[in-house]
Image 1 (cartoon, rainbow, N blue to C red):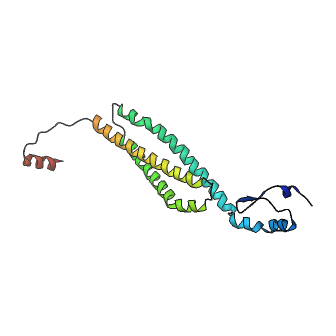
Image 2: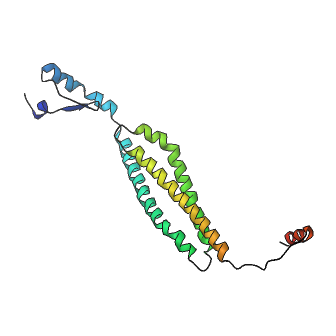
Image 3: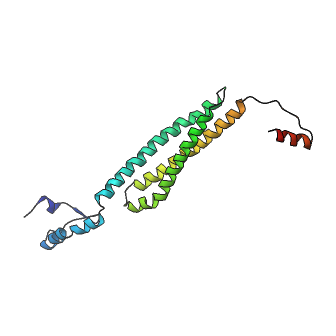
Length: 177
């Protein structure tokens, strides 16, 4: 009884191997199916890995776009004639806290992700890229926060300068604050 399977290579334990066409080879092939099941992963694990890969891909895409957009913001801020709202600093700080938590979650789970991957799978590399782009966005936001604070200090109205020439005058000045 000859079939299409007699002439095709089969996969066993991740390696290609030609089947022996003798009855012994055929029975060995037939009875070795459990070996491939033992090395496979449950469907729920594979689905979770697919979802993680999509999640990391979305992070990489969205955060890379935000970084690209943010490159122009520092230049835009320095050209403004008036201060930037302090509420925007709070918005950036809140986003940074979310990024910090996201990065920490990815770092805490990196070992588990790496342990789930088999050679040739890219999930772990996607995770590392997501961590790098998350850190890059956080760092850019920190630079933007500082640019806003420096800009605001530069454009805010300046108070009248007071010349202090003695220790008593310095103490009195600080006491008045």
